[in-house]
Each structure stands twice: as structure tokens, then as C-alpha cells.
Image (cartoon, rainbow, N blue to C red; front, top):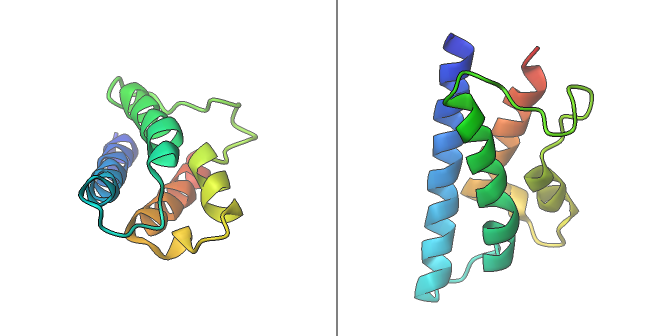
Length: 102
């Protein structure tokens, strides 16, 4: 049960970081993230994982063998240094945790 609670906490922290980035964009503050990526990838994916986690389940959308989060793909495939932003660091932390779940 500890693992699921840690997972839920990490998902909530990731959502908080994404909300900060969205608020920056809304206020015109420069952000390496774009609104579409947050709206169409990060928020839906993290909220979906959180929905399952709140029921006590770890959800593997593509099966246990393919654990790469879609958010991680965009993060690592970007020309911008998204991995060096607070949200990027949190997504990588989430990915590492997700990879370690058996």
C-alpha cells in the first residue's frame, strides 16, 4: 500500500507542476512548455494514472513491458530543454518510479 500512496503523491506533485506551467502560459510568462502539450498529453495522462491509482491500481496503458509514459516521449524528444524544467524533472521522477513498479 505504501507504493500506491507514494505513486499518488508523485502524480499529484506532477499535476501541480503542470498547473504552474499552465498558469505561466496563461499569464504570458515565458515557458518552455506549450499549452497544447500540457492540455493534450500531460494532464490527460497523469489524470488517467491518478484515477486508477485512487482505486488502488497501477495502470499500464500499453502493458507492463512498455512502461514509457507518453509525457516522457515528448519531454525527451523536444528540442527545448523540457527535462530541465521543474515539470520535466517531476515527469522524469515519475517515469523512474513507474519503471520500478513490479
